[in-house]
Length: 219
Image (cartoon, rainbow, N blue to C red; front, side, top):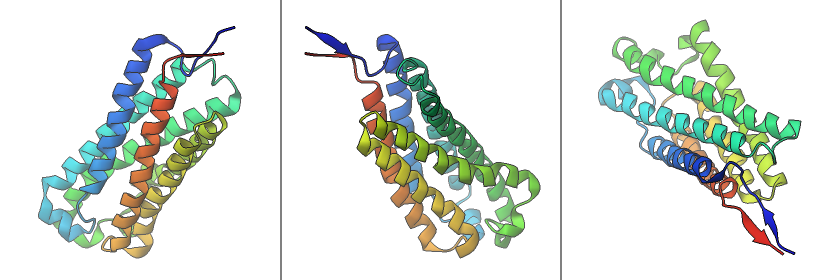
């Protein structure tokens, strides 16, 4: 007897949308992190618009990833019917959207601040209440969401995708948190973000390929 194993429902159009948004979004995000300028105020003032451009690319990448996650959740609703599965997907989606906000704030606010107060950029003294509402939750929700999404993928058989997503998101976000303790001039921040963004992007690609694979017959 033949039976069909469905990885993702909704047919070819939804698979195409998920693949066309999530995978390019992950790779664009990784590329932008790799070419990200140094984070201290003096260097941001020197590079000018390049700092904003790299953050614009990161923001577009995150937006595409969010669309991809939403499409995967919609198309895979039958397999993701359990509350803990839906919680994981929506937590990752919320973390991605919130981190999108962080990147937009960073890319628009800090180049301006760097022109008149470069020593203030990326320091606790520059973290007013309006900025903190975006920045601090993003640094918690992003890694937490992808830890939960990583566990979801592992439960459904995509273990490598889950491991890379979770570990990559945690290491990448550690770089963002470290900027307040080590200072924006520390080379450790760039290393942590690149080392984390690489596995994260690969995990995102593997996850998307897993969930958008066409139905296959077994038996």
